[in-house]
Image (cartoon, rainbow, N blue to C red; front, side, top):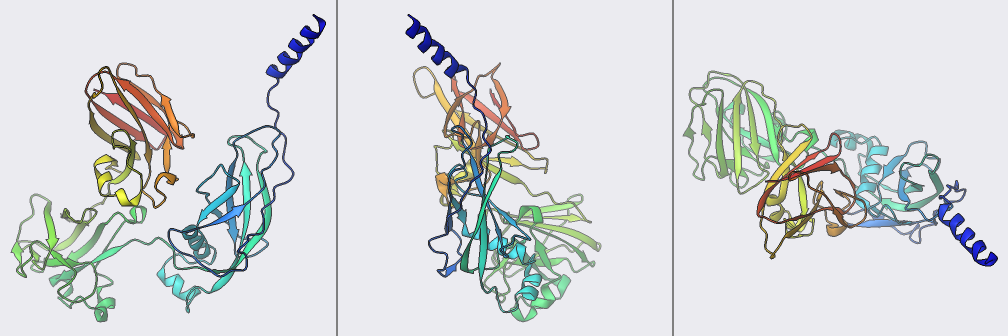
Length: 420
């Protein structure tokens, strides 16, 4: 009996003991095997940093990241995200390192690139150190020793807004050739800086009366190859503003838009090439604010569990939540049909963008960090809760056909789901 009580006492103590954080004192970043090998950074490739696992005194899911510098003393550092943040074998995109080289070198655009590296970016050593910490646990952060890759060749990796050209009467029909690049520098429509890659271009131009005839070119390759206008034939078509604006489809062709009744003054022109099969143009009298619609993607049963990769970009256009006013609030609605006898299992998460990593896409977020379903309770057909970075799915069982309305509020990191 005494022995049994002692065993029970030991078990009780073990169950009541809470994990106690031990501040780690050792965190080693291994010297890379390829430290002295020439590495030309490329899109879609990665490098690895392998570390030891800090001893926190108990089994804990730690988060790993890294920093890079162009000097061994890390007088200036650039933060790097790991694509596998919970593993001690840290994988870093080579494109992120290329961006870091530009940032640390003071390269912010094409002009500073030419100034800092007039002969192109040279091969150089790049220094790295790893960082490990526990989410929300103060005092858990530990930084490793410094290692280097000694022969890295970077490239210009600063995201810059794309642009197209307005060609026509306002600029004098100079001709869309490389020889006229300086002339056309002032006749470009740009993507917004906060929507690089959107394919939505806008510009404000002071257009005199009687000269509002133009079309658009995506490159300065001559008259014939990269022209976009109202129609394919090289013939201008007359239009009038309705109220204060005009909107029209745009096709690949040389048919110019002409506004014979334009009274002169500033005109805001926006060309939306985000879907090259459905290009549109909007002209607004005066200077108008242009808000580009931003999207996130629904990943789950509703979208057929398509891999969230660039190869599925076209198909995912039907499964986007949109922020149309710059508020940071994304919305989307989809029909859900009950196909089983009693209920339909609906589960999903989100991703901020489609990447080359597919299921390893590190922009995914949902109900929890681990990959799996998190059962969610509906109250009068509605659910609201937080989201975190990870692959946890919001999961619901519904008994009748419905329309699901989803709202993702990035201002307070919440998701609202309504089945109607």
